[in-house]
Image (cartoon, rainbow, N blue to C red; front, side, top):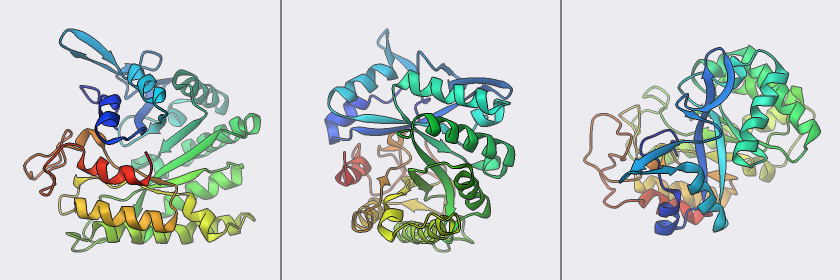
Length: 311
């Protein structure tokens, strides 16, 4: 979910409606381009968290997280995203970056983080190296610290920059829990005639990255089995209308991708975003609070499909 959207999504309402109890929350970024202080989207203080007003009452995301945990759920904080500056770029040393990551984990009471690296930052060697060194340093003290990387992808696989990021992480000694692929916004050249084929293109992307990871781990002297590599992979399609507006991820695509992910033993299946899991008329541009998918007629229909992968 976009944790910085207004109003905040009530996680407890989603759980009550469809049973989803696992949420990735984006995005924690630097307070500004030169300040090594974590914030939610530059808008909200890390320790207070996002909030919104409803009938004169302020409602807090962190209260919703507590409610989800009370029924056995959990959250995965996601750092980075397409907007603003990642902490690894605003911080000027590995030690400061470590401190910033630890602050996020303390505030959210977790020992795992997702790093969403996209846009210009997936090609920025300085922040990539600093991030990976910081992660490795934390893992040296706490081997249970789990790390996901969320990366842009094409049906042909990770871009060269994405491969470089993974190779740098392995060279730095990072134990990668998983690689989550943004199976969306491919463009007509990479994914021609996408209508009705978005699930197939996602499967192609995952298969391509499976081979890329196999090569990267073999080259690093850490070969993995096919099953282990599938379990490291995640997929996050953009439900409904994509930013590349020739692409629409339909409910049928969700059904197809779910079945395939279960067969392969993927480690993660998500979507961008629960904020958009509502019906609305088909538009020519992306709405932030609904999917614009012509086949969606009820709230939480995509969530209802994906919850079968695991709550």
